Amino acid sequence: MKLLLKDFKPEDYQDLINWAQTPEFILQWSGSIFKHPLSIEQLDNYRQTALQKNSSRKIYSAFESETEKHIGHIELNNIDLNNRSARICRVLIGDKATKGKGFGKEIIKAILKIGFDELKLHRIDLGVFDFNVAAIKCYESVGFIHEGISRESKIMGDEYWNLIQMSILEQEYRKIDNT
Image (cartoon, rainbow, N blue to C red; front, side):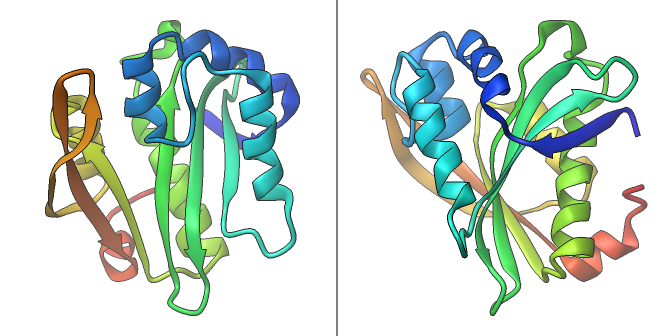
């Protein structure tokens, strides 16, 4: 694998701040949990939620394995071990030099491995805005299935954005070569 996931640490904050420069980007990447401008305080509060006992959130930074350069971010949230489900959130390949090199697919495969192999989940879902065609294709390529659409679920300025709901089940994941 070209990519490594490591626990999200304070030394990763500044890269996220540098990558998240506009309100539109922050909404697309984070939903509604962060406000523009992104700050160290917001990121520290976010990280602290994952460190709490019995947290339902695991937050990772993505690194290019050969150089160990910080290139992205991903979260597994709403982890429900009783129902064996979780939601992928805040997916980002932020380093411009690494865009278009397959790291998006690698980061999703890595988080699916954690979810299905380590946490023994049955279902993992996500939401993606309908205009993010590259991300949709990436998710489809690793086995995610379209479940529906939340029409006009977020507002940016005067425009409403549609959110596509997608999921993958453990048996679907096992049928696809996600190594």
